[in-house]
Each structure stands twice: as structure tokens, then as C-alpha cells.
Image 1 (cartoon, rainbow, N blue to C red):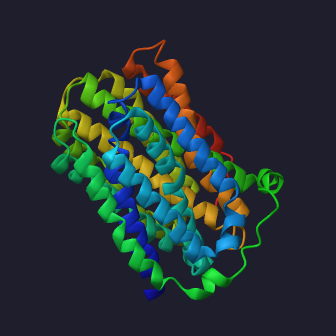
Image 2 (tube, rainbow, N blue to C red):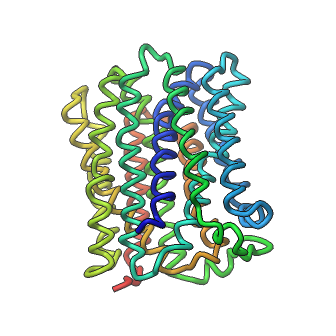
Length: 379
């Protein structure tokens, strides 16, 4: 168990850093840009992340996993520092694009470290524990927003986020040397044909794309809706989001265990999508009630937390640590989902009222449910 501690600790502080600002980035950009331009910046950041992921196998072989971890970490530190002091539109735009492009790459490197030391018959348990660690940090982060964001002054939260990266500089020294030196056999290009021909991997990737699209829509547009349209204060939103994220802490480890030992992942994914779909359909009808919104958001994340750990476990049971090309494709879904959500939002909000965007997300979740039904279970 001790060999997992460096990865778990790194994931915790990285997620606390990332989530501390991810819920305020859209509002921060709104101080400089219109919603349409802000959405376009999200698209550019997602494209930057996609490009890096497309070449990440080659970068891993060039630098080694540990050195590449530090390269991306230092760039991320520079980007978040620039965001803290951004006082012009161009500085805000460039620093945000760099942050959005690089920050998620660090998670990929942690994936490689974790997969290298994971036994396949414990994948659900180990991935469940890892995701629980990440999501404990994500659940705590909105409390930082509630404490440090006052009257749309975002400087303190970016500085806090910067300091949360500091422990990773020391923790990274603990990573096993053999992981850095082992070749990762990068393909000359991403193995799209092999990925497409593997029905299980393809379907679970599409299911994960739907989940990440749900996250992207909610991260970009729900803070704007709750703060700007419904008029909730950041202190209230921070507490609501912390309660909302509790399911990611309490459900993922036991679901991973149950999937490994008794049920497989398919039933959990289907049930989770149904929870999400039901809550999304209700959201456009909710008024300005903090209590009701908190309950609905909480239940939606019960479903999302189950889908997250189940898709994660299912995917990594199909591959091994040397298959970094397929891992790259799987990790492409997060930036791709950000690009999809920002693009759809920028266009569709010109034609529908803001609350109707939750119906759009519900349709996307229904497509994910359809994709999972033919999936072959692991048990």
C-alpha cells in the first residue's frame, strides 16, 4: 500500500489546486470578456490540451515520466501565478489558455505512475481509492471559494491555488525511479484504429465523454447561472458545491470494491446515468431556493460519482501501463468535452434561455446511456 502514497498525495494537492479555481474561472474571464469570447477561450484551452495529449507518449519518452511531471508542474505554476496578477484582457486570456492546456496533463502522468504499480485484479479498489482521494480535495475546494472570494475579487483564490501546488515539488521525489526509466513504447500516432476495433474500449470511452461533457457544462455554466441569474452569493455557492461533491468522496471506493467482487461495472454506469438524467430534467424548473438546488445537485453527483469510478475501472481493466496511446485517447475526452460544452453553449445560448441548457445536457446524458447498454460487463 505504501507505494501508492506518493500518487495519492500528489493527486490530492493537484485536485485541490485545480478545483479551487475551476469553479471561478468562467466568472473571472467574465470580468474581461463576453460569455461568447469566454467560451471561445475554453475551446482554445481544450485544443491546447488535446494537442499535448496527442504527443504525450513521445514527450514521456523524451523527458522520462518524472522529469515530464516537473516540466508540466512548473508551467502550471507559472500560469496560475499569471492569472493571479492578470489585469489586462490579453494577460488573462493567455494565462488561462496555458493553464487549461497544461494542468490536466499532470493527471495523465499520475495515471502512468499509478497504472505501473496496479495489479489488474485490484483495479477497481485502487482506482476507487485514488478517485476518492482526488474528489475529497475537489469537495473541499469550494469551501476555499466561499472563504476567499468576496465581491468577485479572485486574486486571493488564485494565490491559494498556487501554494497548493508547492507540496507536489517534494512529493514527486518519491516516485519510483523504475517508472521513469521504463520505456512507454509510444506509437508514431495515436492508435485510433485499434481503439475503434475494440468495442468495449470504444464504448466506455464514449460513455466517459458524456460524463466529462456533463462536468464541463456544469463547471462553465452552473456558476454563472447560480451567481449571475439567480443571484446566489459566492459564499452560498461554495457551501452548495461542497455538499454537492460529497458523493465523490463517500461512494467511489465502495462502488469500486463492489464492481471488482460482485457485480461488474455496467449496472453501476447505467444506474448513475439515470440519476444524472432525472436531476437534469428537473433543474430548469427550480427557483431561487438554496436548499432545493443543493439537494438536486447532490443527487446528480451521486450518479456522476458512480459513473466516474465505474468507467475508470472498466477502462483500465482493458489495458496495461505500456498502452499509453490508448490511455491518451481516453484522457482526450476531458479536453474534448470542454471544447464541446463551450462550443455548444456559445451557440445555443443565442437561441434559448439560460435554464434550458440543462435540457441540452440531459439529451447528451441520454446518448451516453444508450452507448452503455450493449457493453459487455467484466463479471
